[in-house]
Amino acid sequence: MTKKDVPDDLAAAIAGSAAAAAAWAALSASCRREYVTWVEEARRPATRQARIAKAVGMIPEGRRQ
Image (cartoon, rainbow, N blue to C red; front, side, top):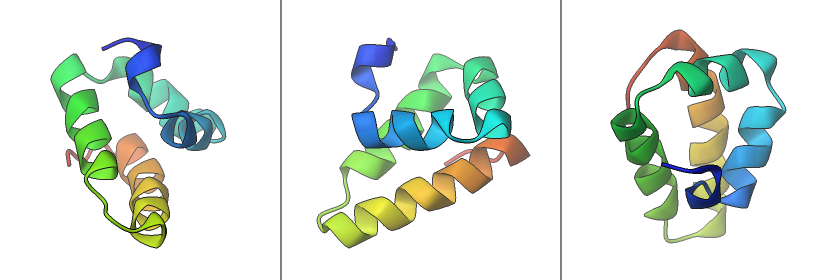
């Protein structure tokens, strides 16, 4: 998965957290894809933003989506 495949809003949120950015870089491509799919499946903008915020907290903990 390239940086191009990650939605801009998710990429910005991850970049805003040093811990999330370091953990994201260490994730496998399949795990990254799970997070991207989960965020992109949100139907409402509010749900999408909530999922992005939750992902930024989950990624440094090593939790999979």
